[in-house]
Amino acid sequence: MNKNSMLFVGLDLGDKYSYIAILDKEGELIEETRLPTTKTSFHQRFSMLPPCRVAMEVGTHSRWASHLLTELEHDVLVANARKLRAIYHNPRKDDRADAETLARLA
Image (cartoon, rainbow, N blue to C red):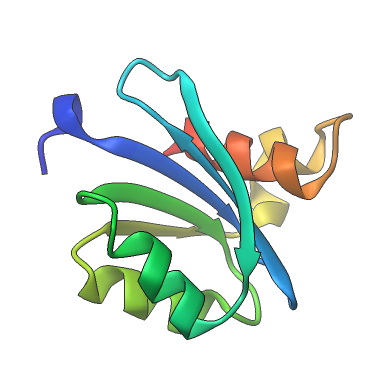
């Protein structure tokens, strides 16, 4: 995957809804959205994107989500949020901020 032509996606997984932040190659936020945390909604949304680097926190849904996104030819990184100081020390702690932080770390 060519880093110069890729998008960077941060995915904050929740039990009902997940937040997505998409950055372009210059680090500009081009989209923020929320979608249901289901295989169907993930497949529908991520199949419309070109191959991206997707970063998400490890959790209940990270296993199936990472497999699905890998099958869709995305480069998936699964991170332990407790080891990511940028997330657990962020004073703006919320799902949208976490998604953007993950995209920037990707």
